Length: 408
Ligand code: FEO
Image (cartoon, rainbow, N blue to C red):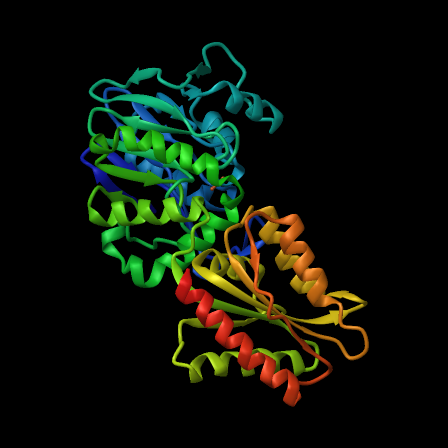
């Protein structure tokens, strides 16, 4: 059965929603699902913008058949070749031998690598940044968006009506389930956290490339009327889109959204957890409430990374394990580095019953492996459990963190 939505008079959402997959990219939990968006233009020529993950292919193919209603599919335009969007290319080409694939040189190279059957006379049409292509009434132009999120990625602007096909940019986790536009859902209240988690975990490493794309978009911002990403809702050009672009700008510049404190603890038997909770209560006692506390062992690292992009300050409380950092805490540190996160202020609480090492090792990692990280000097060392002396030090640390937040 066809499940589609009209984006404009002659452009249809023909994608699919995913609820059965637990892990996006087999790594990031998606409890709210995800959508794979594809769009079909019915002009004098028909053009499909991107495909979907194999998991959504059945719905996607039914949608295309329904919207085409017997018309040929003249073109398949590929903006991004990651398989969550490109997996169904072959299925389209088998079903539509008339279809010509439009994309760029790198994308065609990757299509060959993935084994897609794009060979054949006049089966492909290569484009580059700045080229234009007309489907009849609609003319599109191409803008390269390297590393947002793969090197071949590009975005396509319909200069006739201002629809921007933005590939992964402005996407989010979360299935849209019949909704289409961002103004049809409580985006700020219920979607922003997943949008942040999507962007910073998928493209966080490539902040400068996102900045480059935002700069290009800025030059044609007044032309853009609708933004069609490959995941999540479609954006109309209004103040909400400008707000969302502002979020992208902050995330890709590694600037915190909020002056606040993220407390992440690694605890084996509850004593380091107690130290972290003790510290949190000391913040509250002093009237400071904009903090969140997470157990590194029971929260997927993608959530911790997203929260770290959000807040200005991070307090890490870690037990010493095998004379090192507790492994889940190490994974979190490693992921922060891999995603290029920078410009945060940290404080450290360490625990060790006979040879506390975690504090030195965390501080070394932050100072030597990462960029523009500040570590407050008021480290607290706990020996097995908080005592009178370390309790006093936690008071001093709470004062220092609040002062630092207020100065930020
Ligand atoms: Fe949604 Fe980079 O693929």
